[in-house]
Length: 593
Ligand code: C2O
Ligand code: CU
Image (cartoon, rainbow, N blue to C red):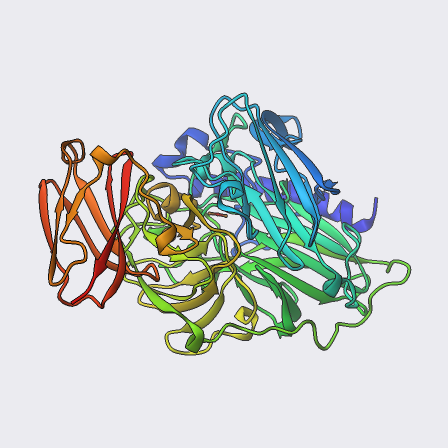
């Protein structure tokens, strides 16, 4: 045992003694049921320096090849010595293996659900057909196996997988269902980068969790104990050379403001969708829920050093997830700078990478001028990070049966989000990777210059992103976009889109006698809809989109006869979608003034 390890053991004991007192101070009535949780760690915030890191961080096992078998099941995991915590695991007791895939491979994936509840499995960041995307519509009932396959099209990147179950994504992820998915390609392979998994290339899943005194999880939004790959009080031995950390914010609610305790700089080399054009040198990096960043640390001259991976959360405002103040609740990690993990720099490996490359890959962002259209999304609602507040997009809470956007295959679209709510949110879009065009009219920071699928948006901010919706059309299974604060997502801050090969490809999909009657067609200045009785037993939603999928009309009605004014509409073909409950009808309308 090294001096450091002994020292840590001593600090641990010391800090636990202090913690009992602190724990008591921090607990309010909400927490009294679990006072004196000796093992709910890291309660020692900025006020106390004696944080202790004495567990070697778990490096998840890998699966590679072209067939991936995932067994999702209840388990018991010991995060703390002799303390049993009931969990969910994937091929294990907490979290899942890291999936290694090669661009261009066709992979088969079998997900067996041995839970006592329905789940789904989503490949966050992967560009895959909608029916394989694992959103809330593709359920895996308990006791069944979901068998899918897709071609790996993403470039080299750090992705992840997790359930997306309707209204229980947060709980299932909290219980342990998540894993990393690393894509490799030949372009990345030619760069002089660390890529030996677990040796100089480390996956780091950052999560906060709370525990009851009997060891069970205390499920809450902003928790009090940091886990890295499921390890509390984690340390990582890093060789004295250039090392690569693949950071994933796998927390339900908490955002991290990453830095190192000796204030050393590091290089951001990749964001969600892959490598940047060149390394970006910084000493702080915000990573919000669902985001991934790959960073390089140059440890060539640091052998013998010990320092902490930190979240400088004292720099967050109260309306950011993990800041201090009432919107965040009362986790002792809120609004303070805290250590996530300790890094110990040890002897270098054979043939180490000792230099950070000057350039990485060619990045060619989509240009705003090439967009077919802009969609405007407001973020609405008032509430807290951790409660059931009704945050939504365009004031429309998630409805499994309602398609919020219809996108024509190969459209290049700008989505402009305006945050009218009182909090910051992490926004994620499935199917595509996008480029951030602007933040409040300004170019994004360089580390946001590559492909991404999550962005952070503060109150009153306007963020424009641009993406091309290519390769996969499916007019029945939708893709999701949502807040990746899993409490917000589960409570309706989600919407869905379908990608269709053309607006003409949408077929009438119900028996003729149930079709809404549309006349006149072609229409001039107005069109009448006559809805069959079966529709108007419930509220019917009428959605009209033009031939690029742009929304031109929306209403909800209980009337049997509806007249739409078409005076302002351009000549051309439109799709009228009528939805009611689980039923949906599409019809074509030609407008010709
Ligand atoms: Cu990470 Cu829609 O999910
Ligand atoms: Cu949110």
